[in-house]
Image (cartoon, rainbow, N blue to C red; front, side):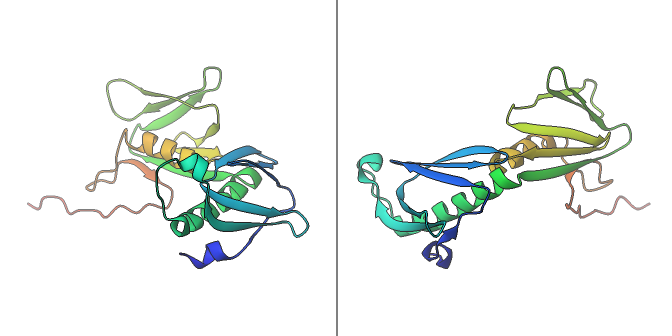
Amino acid sequence: MSNLAKQSIKIPLNISVEIEKNLLYIKGPLGHKMIILLINVLIDKNKKEIIITDILNAEFLGNKKLNAKALQGNTCALIKQHFLGVSIGFRKQLNIVGVGYRASIENISNILTLKLGYSHPVIIQIPNNLKIVCLKPTVISIFGTDKQKVNEMAAIIKCHKMPEPYKGKGILYQDEKIIRKEGKRS
């Protein structure tokens, strides 16, 4: 078990937390989130902190036997991640490298259009819970309150043109480095 799960989690000032049976509701300035709890969580309203215990919710799990101590660290990390999401959000930035490669957004229909050297443009529907902005024709910024959804959308966009190792063309994460291969020698 991680040492993080043994410690209490401080609730930030701009976030409210409520528990109903197996559900933990988190509300903040950017939205609200819900976590399904597999272990018991206690909230101390006076001290503004959350305490995670290792007693399993037997009525929710049914016949499955899970290690409660293993779930403590996972639940602690999820709660902290949702605190960040509803307070400041998550951002992922993609760079498009290549001659003639560009991205554009049609705000009316909520569609991202990518021109990546194919004979046709690649069209991607933007989910309602994410905000995608083209800062430049070659820079895409994805913003949302759920870290998993933001990273998943970035991976979907990137898979349409993976960076190749010879010229480095393709879609890259902002901090990604491509190890370049040497071309043929004559």
